[in-house]
Structures are given as structure tokens and as C-alpha cells.
Length: 280
Image (cartoon, one colour):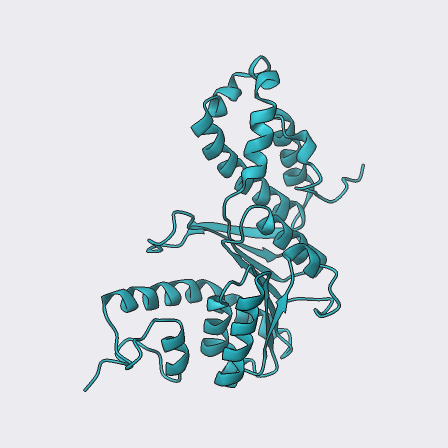
């Protein structure tokens, strides 16, 4: 007897797990596939409560996954949650590579996952695309490269998302601005020592980018949980940011964000990390 369902939840699509290479073609599991499945369940345990919360508000549960790639995340969420618990819900995968969009559409059709759609769009263009509804419940962006994570935040704010799930990726833009303004900043504050050396510029740029993203979300009324995805050995980028809209006070995080931009010489990036206008 094979081990093909040993670690798999009841009702999961065996065909999907084969397509995602979590199961071998003959339906068996090896050590690598068990690790992949563990990673999937680890991420799902963070997202499932958000899905249930959004579903409690109504059956039309809308989720958009940015930088979807092969839509690994979208397919897993549909298989584990949508196909039974949110049958009126929809998942959109946003991806710029046309061949991956085509592949995902074909796989969804083959699996009978009728509530999944895939759009060949950039994250920025998706904000105004008529193919997406005006309000989205949950926005995810896992390893959306460079500024795509910030575009996903902008999308989520525009769509009044209830929950946002981010695993931020490389952000060279902030490091480039830090590098450009380094000479001017060196005489202004000893804090500049944090990014004086090139390797520190890159590392500090990545760190400060995520700090600014968190402050931006808080300045728009979101409550944050910042943690890590344990066991994601395939990537060094394993910071997980979960934002849930709670209509929290906005003034203090907005002030902190603007102060931070000024202290580290990133004032020119205020539009990227935009916050609501502070009222007197």
C-alpha cells in the first residue's frame, strides 16, 4: 500500500498535489514532499482564520493573490477552504508572465476549480483594472519582487481589504536612495553609520523598507502581526506581515513614519509610503 494520503488532509485534491510536486506522479510522498506539505499547512494556519473572519461577513469572499507565479498559494487555498466552505467565493491570481497565467487557467479548468481566475496584469495595473471588483476581502503577496509588494499594499488600501498577508521580497529602491544620499547624511547624524558600508546599505535598506510598510499600514488603521514563516528553507525572505483592518488611531504611526523618512534621508519616498493626511 502506498503512503500517498499519509499526511494529507481529507478531501484534498490528489491531482493538485501532483501538479504542485508535493506528491510524485504515482501518488507517493518522499522526504522533500513531506517538507513542502508541512510548509503549506504552516502558511495555511495563518491565513485560515482570516478567511473565516471574512466569510462571516458574507458568502461572497474575494481574495487576490499578487505576483502569483504558478498560483501555488491560490490553488492550495481554494482546495483547502474555498471549494467546500466558500463556494460563492473567488480567488484571482495576478501575474505578469503570460505562460504562467495560461498554465494556471488550464489547471483550474482541469481540476474543476471554477471560482479561480487568472489575470495577466502587473500589480500596479490591477488597481484600476475593471476585471476586479471594487472591494476585496483579502490580499496576499508572497515574494512579490521589488516594488510589487508596495503596489500590493496600495491595491489593498484602494480595495479596502479586510486582511493583508505579505511575505516581502527584495526592495532595492530604498537602498538606492540611501546610497545616493549617503554623503549628505553622513554629517547629519551618527545614525548614518547603520548604512555607511555597502553591505549594510543593502541590509538596512531591506529592514527599513519593511518597517516603513508596517507603519504605513498602521497609519491606515490596520493592526499588525509581524512574524516569520518557520521552515521555509528555500528562501531567506521569510518575514510574514499580517495586517487586519481595525480602524485604529492613525496619527501616531503616520507621524512616526514621516519622522523616520526625515531621519534617514528618505523624504523623497513619502509618496511610495503614503499615509492619510493628518488633520489639525
